[in-house]
Image (cartoon, rainbow, N blue to C red; front, side):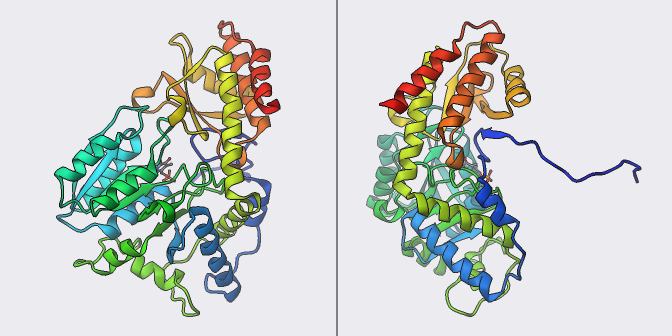
Length: 396
Ligand SMILES: *Cc1c(COP(=O)(O)O)cnc(C)c1O
């Protein structure tokens, strides 16, 4: 019991340049506020069909088993592992940051064995090591890896990794949470079998939905299971009674109706812009931002050829008060950037330029805010030089 005087919550208007969520556009927020309808309303079912088609476009796939799981990216990850794996299976898991470790946890909790292939934080997955692991483990069922490691800002070669999995008769399981909509991803052309993503990174939708897609080979693996999927909620064979094609849709769980309006709108924005144009926009804003960062005398963790344009891992000198700086950015500039995770804590920032947030005004805002704050902390940083360096990339 409390006598506190409660009021409606009005969040501050931030610029979200962290590892997600990213800025949600007013168009998507407006979609969210439209009237709620029943989750079996024929009008809603028509919209669900469009969501599936738009997701197929975003993933570049014809996979029939493509849908948004009603929960965040971690639930998409779990959906893939619990549906494909059975007790006693063996999976080769690549780890070069935080999220490969979570894949391992999912494998183990599915009663399967994880064979780890590890690379350093800031390095892409080494194809030779993966090929050795595949040839030494002929009985492996799947190869699991992260396309875009959000903990380090590294892009791994998903196309070659999926091809290696196919060469050794394994399914490929691919985390595309941060890659979808931000960098090239073509799951049919590359032969990826089971992929999951998230709504709040480069799709710039509200958090809480996880698009997944399964190839026909993966769908057949699920149909051939000897044991029921241990998770009732994430069992795709049950979820498809609701998301499947045709008029007969049965209740499985109540879909997050308004969040799905938002996803529909975010995917429509991606389709209107064009997937390749969105990839190019992320690349251009990253190039401008990187020029500015270097003009500030700061450097990147990741070599240019493996860098994610949507997640910039910027190293800073030991003298910088990391938490203090991020507090000032939030308080004075309404700007959120991400802290370093794990071994990068206190050494690097993770600066996202994801989806709707990947634009020139955010690039210039972030460079200026970083430069003036570092200057105030006694580092001789020059905001004008950083802005000039970024502007020269846009002018080229
Ligand atoms: C954010 C993220 C996830 C988890 O997504 P949530 O929506 O936070 O559950 C998984 N993998 C990667 C690579 C991510 O960046």
